[in-house]
Image (cartoon, rainbow, N blue to C red; front, side):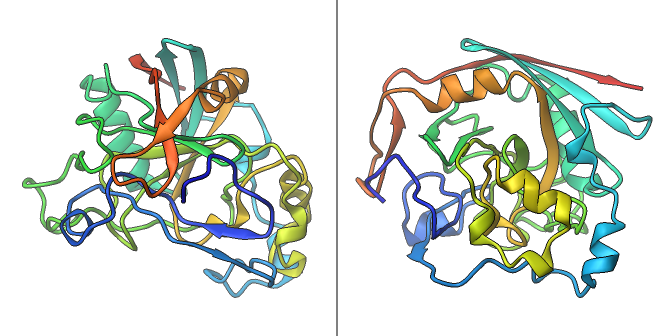
Length: 263
C-alpha cells in the first residue's frame, strides 16, 4: 500500500511478499488487499445471538494459562515475549505452530513485514514473505493437499491487540507465517456491536484489527511482552520488493528461539 500506518475505517488483509500470479500460488504466502469501508465490520462466521455471544468463553481476555493451553516464549533480538495458545479453538494452527517451534523451524527467521499501528508478521524461513509451509505438507494430504491447511474461525477468538494469527494467501492456505495484531488505537467503532460479545467490543477499544475477523485464524494471545511487539512495529521501514507498500524493515528483528511449555 506504500504506507506504514493503518487508519481507522479501512479493511486490511495480511500481506507477505510480492503480489504476482506466481506468488498467489505459493504455499504460505500472504498478500494484500485494501479498501475503504464505510460499513461496520460484522463477524459473519457465526449466527449466534448477542445473548449467546456474551456467554462464550473468551480466553484472550485473561493471562491465566489453563490446562488445555500451551505457552511459547519467543526470544527475539528486540526482547522476549510470551504467547498462550488456544488448542481448543484452533487445534491445527496450534499443533502446526508448536511443532515448528519445537523443531527450531522459526529460529533465525525475521519479522519480515512490519506496519506500525497494524501488525508485525514473521514465520517465513526465506525472509521474503513468499515462503514457509505447514508441518503436513507432503506428509498428510488430507490436512494439507499442497496449498496449506484450513482456516479455524471461532466466535471465541478475535483479532484484538496482541492476538496471534495465521497469515494466509486466501481461505484455507495456512502454512507457517503468522502475525501479531499491534494496533493500539480504538477500533470499536469499526465493528457492528450486535455481532460481537460486549467484552470483545471493550477489548477493541484498546486496539486490534476487527476487519480481519472471519478471514484469519486467531490461535494465540500475547500475555507478556507487548512492549517488544511495539518495538518491532516501530522499526524503520522501506518499500518492499515490488513497491506496493512501505513495510520492509531496514534492520529486521530476528527470532532467536522459541520454547514451548504446557500445563
